[in-house]
Image (cartoon, rainbow, N blue to C red; front, side):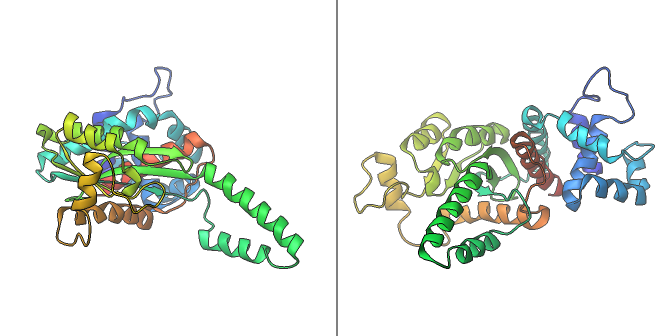
Length: 306
């Protein structure tokens, strides 16, 4: 909470509005929300936790514990959609001052559940629903496919750029729906590139979901960053890529990449695994906007934990 409060004090205004009641500052409420994500609690759960540990509140200057309604309103009043970049800027500055940042980043995306029911449970339900008579099976299959397509359109997805040396998230881009990854490459890489001091970012690693000749040109020509992106997106074919950078990737990244630069791309998957194990793989928010903000808050919490 102390780290989150110090971060927010440098990044957020004291109050969200000049007409605020002034019972709590925005950095204090932000620290409570980070604690909620860290403990994987509900609003009522973190309120009870703070009542049991009031010295935590005193450490960040609060004289009383905010109730669950205050915390819920604070989550929406934070406006993380526009304020998260500033928070990530300060976090990157802290790591740069400590000389911890490396010169290689890895880009990857990961999906999150909208509830706490596992994907395996959903798959088994569809499997048993398709048993029985043929007509019933066809109807059940069509219904399950409709449910699956509907859930795919609502699936939260988080694309991140992670420093392979420290596992720090330098950029995060949440979205709702199972869309293509390659569109996120340019904004993610630009945010990471400007946050590494002295423009010392040298290499970016990505999987085949980001395979695009234009992405190579953006990285290599515009930002002077060496891009290593696995080929193979689109329809499977035995033909070689026709564009120069993708053909180069097809040749350079063939075979095992153990003990080679591209082998560090697995660090992005490590970061996704860390976030889901430490902070959970299901979201609590119900609206698309709330889910995007929750993913941003979870990304910042991961960096605060580091």
